[in-house]
Image (cartoon, rainbow, N blue to C red; front, side, top):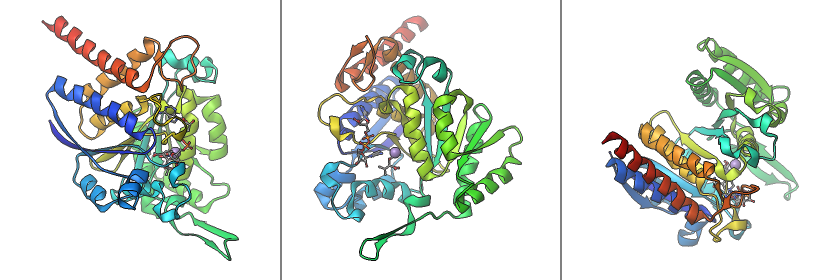
Length: 366
Ligand code: NAD
Ligand code: IPM
Ligand code: MN
């Protein structure tokens, strides 16, 4: 398989973890005889420093013609006080919007050997396996106007959704539930927001097309509570942009660290942008301590969703799982015991687990 992959390392720990994903993909390409060609482009603060804008045209053009995109993270204190339209985050929002990546899939599944790494009780998080399907290109993030008025004393943000934007993400939620455990939790705030009332109507309409899927409606405040008290009651969660953003960072607690969570931002064809759920972690940037696993697992999602390479994706996931079983962890996972390692060392261990598996497979088959 011959694929053109755009790398957008971005800011903070973005570059460190991107290097890890690139090494893992290079190893996979060698083992399976694929040709992955990497093209690096600027986004976020990195692009502001180089070109004065968070999303250069060249980056958009490259992403538009690529087979898939990997993104590290954007943002940081260096760019926090610049005009809002130039903020690094505008680069990320802009690339999602211009590529039409309306569905953000955020799988949250704890590794068995990390159950004790979560501040939540093991018996609560045991067996939890959740897919958060977050709307990504609408809602409060993109509604206009979004501005200050009356000498800065009045503020307006607009929550705008067209019915079709809700329909396609809700459809994605149902499809996802159908191929998983057939339970869909729709999260909204229908007791207050008109947008949520339309959302709920659409969920109920679509439910008729999916009689095999059980639908549950939860208000977002209750959902936030249930997510950490009864996480194993969830299968697929479908929700709008802002609720999904907040709930997915909360759900990361089930896995022990935000640094573990991958995500896929996709549309209806195979093109996608793959990025960890976490941000640029300015507090630990440049120290070789960041957890690269969310990024590496995002690369695995790219292989699965954009290229249909299930075996290769599973091999990466197994290699990561093996690291956990061997007791290796980066500093963000507060483990008693185990072996704390750097970003680079963790990457080497993942690579070693990949190779070991291939060698043992070839011995078994010969
Ligand atoms: P963050 O996710 O960057 O960090 C939150 C906490 O988690 C920090 O203590 C950080 O050290 C830790 N953390 C995050 N990822 C980690 C990893 N891989 N390994 C170890 N520890 C990790 O969120 P924040 O501090 O609120 O935001 C920092 C910047 O990142 C902001 O500018 C924000 O806008 C941006 N951001 C970007 C993205 C993205 O690019 N997708 C996502 C979220 C936040
Ligand atoms: C995420 C981030 C982004 C979001 C920010 C950086 C714009 O928090 O990917 O979860 O809110 O979508
Ligand atoms: Mn977020």
